Amino acid sequence: MATVLLVEDDHVVRGAMLRSLADRGHAVHAVGTALDALRRVAAETPDLVVLDLGLPDLDGSDALRMLRGITDVPIIIATARDDEQTVVRLLRAGADDYMVKPFTGAHLDARITTVLRRVGRASRTAQPAVHEVGDLRVDVGERSASLGDTPLALTRKEFDLLAYLAARPGRVVSRRELLEEVWRQPSVGEDQTIDVHLYWLRRKLGESAAKPRYLRTVRGVGFRLVAPD
Image (tube, rainbow, N blue to C red; front, side, top):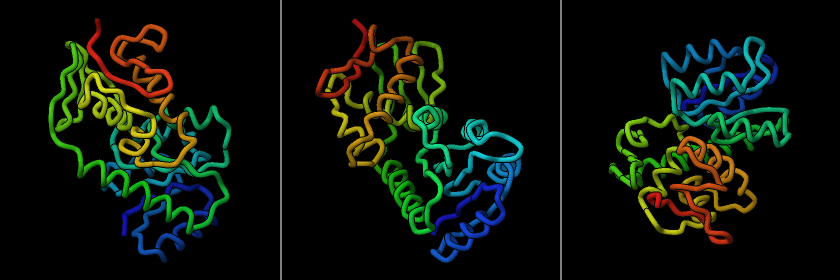
């Protein structure tokens, strides 16, 4: 059983989703606005948030960014938007998963279970440590990273990706390994997720794929984190 915050403005959809999740053993709290969601998360952190994008007071993408500013709990986006640009924006803002409406209660329950299992396994296997590669410092215990004297503002998944690579400096890590160990998603077809997070990670490290410093692409194999030449 998980404590789920359901953020959905349509009262009919909200009621149906609430009943379906409750019938499957979850403790569900439902709100209809982004402001109420922020207040609820600040007052009592849930295990997971299901966030609709079409909210009356604030676009769900903005709500997602604001939620990420106060919590790192898993967030599943529920949206009728399925275009690539929206997906990329959601990943950049820190979404853990997204579902395109309409979907069944059983499907949502399965996604919740998968996301919570993935996050829980990552938490259990993470060993508090500090990794230093060149001027890059990654503190796993404090979940912080810095480049020289400059702290890096990373999303939860960006930090997980950087920490995984920093723990294996110089070693080539395949896309499949990243999917399995960082995203806990062994399925194929998720390369876009890796590429989006690597793109933003590179920007925050002051580099690009064309002019890499720390993050090196080994074409056809994977990626490795190294100290700059």
